[in-house]
Image 1 (cartoon, helix red, strand yellow):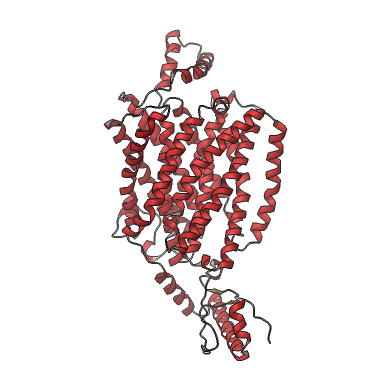
Image 2 (cartoon, rainbow, N blue to C red):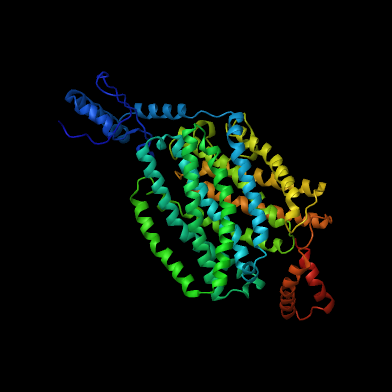
Length: 560
């Protein structure tokens, strides 16, 4: 008996010995082979070949012919293979109807919204803890840290969703390999990016006079150790959950693009806030600097090991090298949003409940659109080549929402129709449960209309920038799964923070009852901060009169 053959790369295998050989179909699509199919090795199938030497010989011959055709295509000697590949790409993508998309996404989106609501409630509660009062850098870090966790998980969800839609996850052997490779990526990224988020928070807080005085070595270790440990724990739990959701979606013949992103974003927010608060408070109560330093060094030391194994995995070897820049850039982009949120939280108690909801829903919706466009490009064209239906990435805003010229406009308009009813639903839910929490919400017309206008503007800008970023990245041979989603998620947080701060500033200007200052007991804790600001201004402006100095605290209250 001849030895078992090795794996053959082949596009089409035509077997004349149908009575002796099983039906063989390609079951894996690898980007490195330009869309050609790879016939994986199956012992049960090859055993049939071994019983007949003629069948085995024909199989090897046909495989060699297929490899020769592919090599000729790479050398540019023929164009038939390119045309066949292009036809295969163009016929492999079938746009879904809006009814099917809505039917698949509404339950995950509903759960994601409740996750964002509870994330806001948890954030409103934990900001009253002693660690958040004594370490203000922790509150500044929250938006960037949540965005960090969300970026890692949404890029993971987008990569796995694209692989599922291309059929890679249908092979059990390749399923285990790609899940293992992506888990290694997450474990390698988590401690490094957690440390980076802590350092960025410290850098931003050093620009603020009030928070600058609270930067100490103890607070720095607390921030770094809490961020690193929370990042590892959260990403491990969320990665396992998202992988299970995507595999189950594929088994149930559902599009993972419509399901995985909301699950990743919703669970990421509420779990990360809760874990970060608990770990930070425990570290704060423990006050053991050696333990915190050892924890940081231990996790950083094992990171290269994860990176090495991710580098030798063929599904993760490119991502482990190229998947850092976009996420690191997203953390930097989100830092100004943290300053805005931290300043606004000091003045408006209700805002801390709505902020994760606004950012979460915006990130969910734009993440769905970004992941779907990425899957579309992987299905219909090669990297660096835009399809004829979307031949430009620099387009006007109306192009993104016009179904006459853009096949993705129907989905964009569906998301725009969903955003307002979703926010109204969750706003009503918050109103009904407010008696259990330490804030008061009155559904006035100015509040509801201003709030809805802010989220509409946020999503409109996000959908436009998502289109531009996805198609620009593809035209530059960059995978949008790793680059566009962190960019749009970071912008969702920044725009959500800024638009909500502007909305509450307007509501305060018209004296809306919802925009009330924080309670007196908390306000007393910040009175010393205003006095510090007053003394600083006095030392810099010797000609300032006493009357002007007395008005400075009132002026600070009117900023937001």
